[in-house]
Figure 1 (cartoon, rainbow, N blue to C red):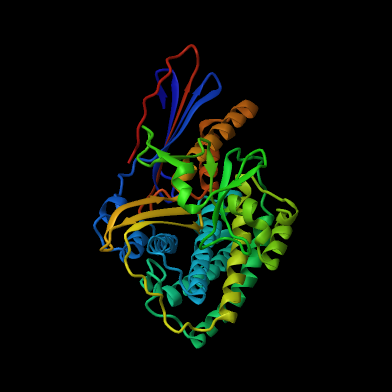
Figure 2 (cartoon, rainbow, N blue to C red):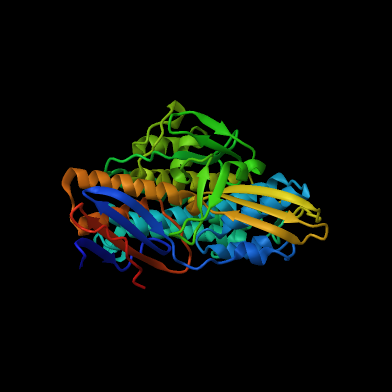
Length: 457
């Protein structure tokens, strides 16, 4: 609509992003002066109601933060509390945790690839519309997701908000016989994951580059999932790392007026977590089959320094990570011998613990302070999407500015570009609703610079 000489555009719904939010663009004399990802969903206060709870409860409580990546919250919580209590779990338990995490990586990455992101590349408005023209592809994605869900169900007790996880390990561990049929399902899933790589490699990708620093966990001998050292790859190619316990000394959160979600800076700079960061920082430690998939996907060989900073090509990295997660699950199952007991005892100790794991969307950090009775006196959760919001805004600003400079797109084209740019990063704003209200304000020096706008709920 026209508003005081400005063009204002409202887009009522963006169903392929998880959560409630709004995007506002201010364009003045052809220059994008502001791009704001406005998160207007009310705060959920998880950190507040963790205070006063028993130290055994955060793995179950924080799993409810997200229905897509509950294992990430459980594993980061376990890592932090076990760190506070000075406990190291049995290596077999650690492998089982990694196996459970592989299930979450498979189902989450595949959900994003097939149901949220692929429609953008194939000119379809939704996965339902995509299924009408690419039925076999969507069915392959659903089979893959089912394999991830099966892992979650067997190891975690159920596919959403697993109930079998506890401090020190699990309430119950599977037998080798129980894992055998799952291995057969995963062998089919590995073929499907390979076909996914070949499928998405055929998409056309716009030119773009993330200029933010990249942050991911790095492990010495494996691709980091359930633990590692926070490592930074700067835009100039330099690297740095720091212990998990120093995370908040490097990543600082601040409140911004236009969002109920906190923004983060890494040593004062914009940063991005997630698949692009993991591939850039730890890609050389992918398994041989995943490295082969990366080369076939056109990403290059990370052992030779290949890095991908194009957010549109993040779908390729997610496909490679799906191959990795399936193959890694098969490796763990093949070597599995049940532990003597399903968990390591974790007696309460007064102290502070830190934990970080790699959720599908990026590094997830937890910190807990416990008293001598094992009660939580403070809690801090730093999810990946909150860390990524500043980089997403910067990405949007630069992409829209380039588009306006090259061809001055109309509002419909600009809206489509913004929606794609947001979905590149798979933001998990919340796990309850799917909504975006987009406001574009266009002004010139001859018209008032309107900064009003709102959300159409």
